Picture 1 (cartoon, rainbow, N blue to C red):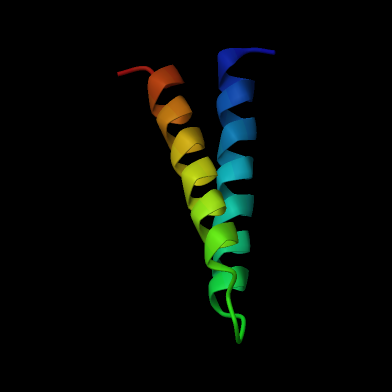
Picture 2: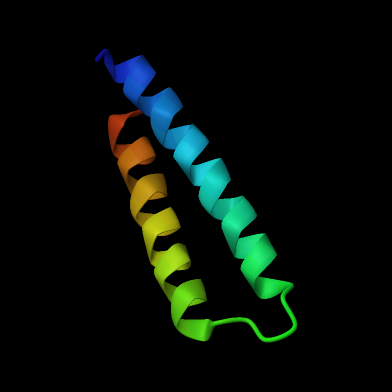
Length: 55
């Protein structure tokens, strides 16, 4: 897999996590541990995208 393809895949995953965060946070009783897990995963992916992106 090329770096560009990998970054595209990570961007899609980042968007999916953003949607999951939005859905969870707008539930009547959001699961705070799930929110924390989603946020950590989203940040991890963002860091990986920045690391792979040319500067």
